[in-house]
Length: 120
Image 1: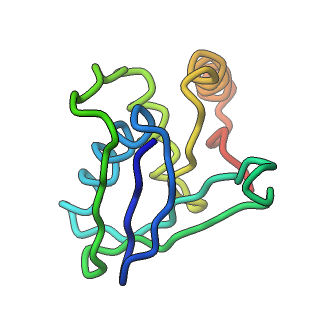
Image 2: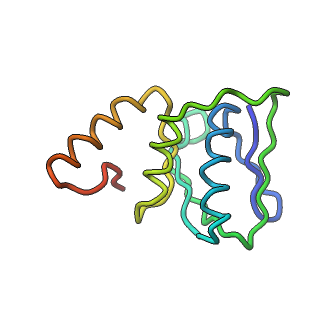
C-alpha cells in the first residue's frame, strides 16, 4: 500500500498499483494547470463513506509507494480514469476490475448520444 500525501501532510492510503495509475492522470491534469476533485469510496474497515479532495497545482502533493518497482500501466485503466477526470464530478477511482464494464458502458452511451457514465 502506498500513500497519497496531500497539502500539509494528510496521508491517504491507496494500493500501489492504483496509485501509479492515479499519478499519471493527476500529473497530466496538474501539468495543464487544471484544478479538479479526486473522489473515492472508503472501504467499510475505513469507516465507509466517500472522500473528495480538491487538487490544484498550488497545493503540495506527493505519491509514496511501498514497492520498489513501478507496475506496468494498464492503458485501458488510464483511459477510464482520465475519462472520469474530465467530468464535472472529477476523477473517480474506478477499480481496475471494473474497467471493461466501464468502457463498454462508455461505448453504449456514445452510440446512444448520452453523456458520461460517471454520476454522483
